[in-house]
Amino acid sequence: MTITRLSPLGAPLALLLLAGCSSLLGPRRPPDLPEQAVCRQEARRSEEVRNVQRRWAPGANDLMIQNEMYLAEDRAFRNCLRERHLPGANGVELPQR
Image 1 (cartoon, rainbow, N blue to C red):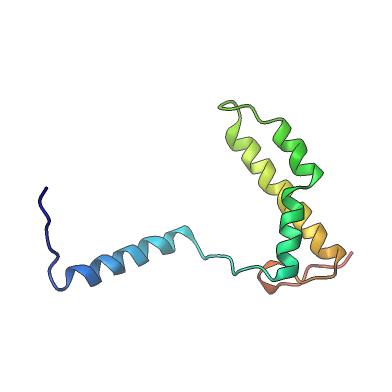
Image 2 (tube, helix red, strand yellow; image 1 turned 120 degrees about the horizontal axis):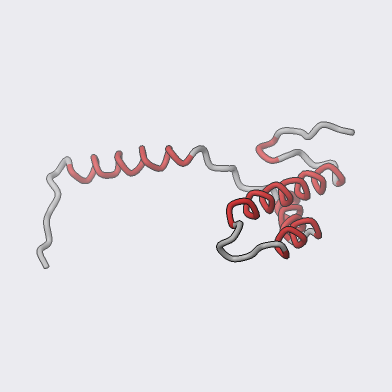
């Protein structure tokens, strides 16, 4: 096994390249407030999410079920925030009904 060394500029250039690639994934969501984290946990265990999970069949409809689970979890999360009168994710207040 041969170990190659980077030139003095190689390491900084490699780090810049990696940083540029990570920005392609989109902005990261800021961490949840403690109250929001509780709502997110409740959303993951919600009845709607469990109903979607029951319909999952390996290999048959993975992308469709993943999308439905994401939407169900997001709805449950937002409903929990609204019920507790908490600000939405990213600090945006949810519309009141």
